Image (cartoon, rainbow, N blue to C red):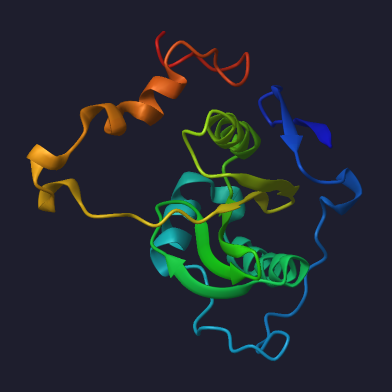
Length: 191
């Protein structure tokens, strides 16, 4: 399902993969364990992210961390996911979780342009230049993107460069080369 979301600056972004009636996730207490599975502690927004969000978007000062922590638990229930790790991030609450279908990442983004960023993630996934996006959900606290977890391989610095295929490295870039921007409010990568 596709729904249009009006952004604070007047732009409209398509948000995919959710029913608009479910877009407002009712806050629930942050309690553990969930479905009998142990939840890693602490399952909280890292202090560095809270500080960065407060500096960048002052309107999210006091309740943003509590709201996204509660929303995370609700999303984990919805996807039957077991949170495993909170990633360091600049402005988002990014959590790796395990499901019966594989590893996912749940990312809360307070940026008012979060729906556009989610649309970019979907466009990259469609081109196979990014992980599969299962859903984007807009809440009062921002935008959640739920996608497949991508685990890094061997760092290029530790690889025998004679064994590296430049063609293979260029595949994701080749996939997006010449493609139009995901939304009309964004330039293409070649502009």
